[in-house]
Image 1 (cartoon, one colour):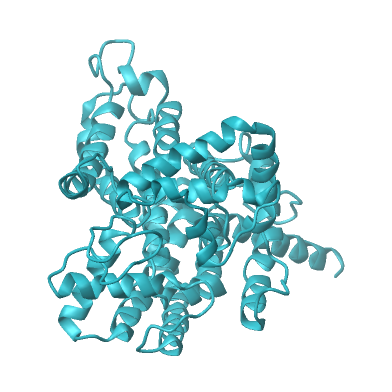
Image 2: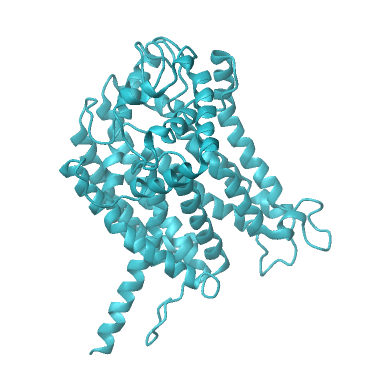
Amino acid sequence: MLTAGSRKVSLALPSRACSHGDIPAVAPLLWAITAVAVTARVASALYQGDGIGVLPGTYDQVSYDALARRVLSGHGFTFPVQWWPATRADEPTAHWSFLYTLYLAGVYALFGYHPLAARMIQAVAAGLLLPWLSWRVGNRAFGTCAGLGAAVISAVYPYFVYYAGALMTETFYILAILWAVDLSVSSIRSVLPSTTHSRLSLEPAMKEVGVWLLLGVALGIAALMRQVILFFLPVLLGWFFWTAGWRGLRGDPGGHGGLFGPLIPGILATLLVLFLLIAPWSVRNYLVFGRLVLLNSNAGYAFFWANHPIHGTSFVAVMPSATYVDLIPPRLRALDEAALDQALLREGIGFVVADPGRYALLSLSRVRDYFQFWPSPDSGLASNLARVFSFGILLPFAFHGILLSASTWRYRATREQRTCVTLLWLFVATYSLIHLLSWALVRYRLPVDAVLVPFAALSVQEMSGWLRRRSMLTR
């Protein structure tokens, strides 16, 4: 917190700064920010139009559109012709998000075949929810000013505006992740020792059971959009255990809380909801493929192609579609989609085992593609401008904000701020590592961008304070 005459910036804010008590004071600003966000995203949706064009980075919408129309016509999750990556005509697919496909099918059922309707609904939802969630996460981590700054950045961030109009999973996936982060911090508050309560029991967790259940919903939506988030689940659970500590697991030394403290019931409630959301699709996959496929059949394809010896030690982010198909060994091409996915995963792991040194260098080379913020001769003018004015601007501020948060993490932050900041650090590191070890594309990094936004807002807040103090000293 800035104080008159002070040269220091403290992240330790009154507890009310992370509560709903501040919402009335900032509500007018949040509504103004939201209006800007909605307007920008609606403009993006209108620009992308009522057809399925192929703008840079949005080719997946062709598949989602075709799949949604097949579902509506009564053919289920199938394609009428041979489809990417290796799905034969009229055979079941699990490669694409079931939930997003159903979203598109539902919109088409209500409004007729009008992709613009789906774009507009998605754009308005993103415009309303993304600034709000960014505000909540930023407020929890760094206080009111940084929370408002995070809302502003997320409202105008070009990548977020662009993909809000694309019929792909990115927008809803990012919203689900930020919602899960916010709910995780809310959930852990029920198990942290309170200054006004000397003992722990099941009572706080029972009062917060709704939050734990909603966390399961948020994680379930994220997983149904993109199953890669499940790789972060063990890290999230570890964060819960580490944050709660021994008392949160076992109850207080006096025996209150019994064998299990308040953490375990909450986590079980979250995992139960997550299981209930995923299980129906696991059953569906078993029925149509005759084998266990937890959710989507795409991890094997991605890992195989991303680590194929054709790359050498320098990752090629995008190759011609035919090249990917040609790389599939002929002996495996007769397999159905799910069996081929699992076979390709084994092949990909074989590449790593056969030459771990090459795999290490190849993974290192993916840093360039994952964190690219500079113009590329292979991209068009619009793509280069979006890249530079999105991540190119966000990255230095976010990096500075991470350094600021690390320097004040232990000594100047409240306990709730420390738990939130730690979770943000873990997500950025884990999610980035997952893609650096598999497949790295700029749009795969967008959830990390969303989590970096509060750090960038903290940096802007600090520099604004520094400039203000400098101005006062020179008067």
